[in-house]
Amino acid sequence: MAVSEQAAPLISVERLTKSFDGHPVLRDVTLQIEEGDLVSVIGPSGCGKTTLLRCINCLELLDSGRVCVAGVALERQDRHSQPDRLFADQAHRLRAEVGMVFQSLNLFPHKTILENIILAPMIVKNEPKDAAVANARRLLAKVGLSKHENRHPHQLSGGQQQRAAIARALAMNPKVMLYDEPTSALDPELVDEVLQVMRDLDNEGMTQVVVTHEMRFARNASDYIVYMEHGEIVEISDEDEIFINPKDDRTRRFLRQFMETA
Image (cartoon, rainbow, N blue to C red; front, side):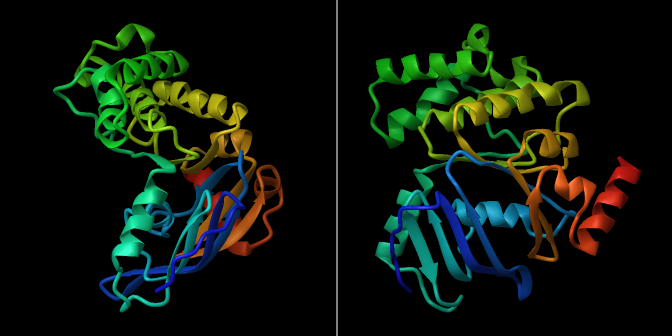
């Protein structure tokens, strides 16, 4: 097992593999994402999209390959090599560069929205409470929730809760934001308010990777789109080209089926 660092691109995934119970979920995945890109990852359910995100954020331990985020890299030769203390420390450093927003919101129900946002900066980064509160209020304004800081999650709509979850992730000042189907649990009328926050972050230069079934968002907001199938990257293409003239028959078939059932 080796640990190394490099400066750019901001996210680099090289020959990444991951299996569960002997079933391959990611097969030799290689992907590079530059700083400031907004990348949508699409594909059928079970194709490895979420596992890719979780490996980038070290929520899942890669079996083999290399993952590098903001110059912090993890490398593993095979699934039998045991992570050592240096590897674990490097994984902690890597996670500090990444914010993640899940399909399930994971907000603490007994805490107010403001308390949810200040908790991690105060505990993990030892940020003084006054500074954490000031930053949280700035982020709540960014996501349009300034008037709701003293409400509890159950007092907010699903869209508002997801925007609060984005603000909470941003409070750790990440260099990269990852989203796992952030709108799939929302009513259709609430989807756009969450997607608009992501568009605004893109305009500010935040690097974002979004696993999504929102094809309209993927086409309109992405710098490019990654299509996955059976644990492999099939096609990486411009957001318009992949819809108008996909290069691979598998991409063409998926988009046709998806549009027919949407």
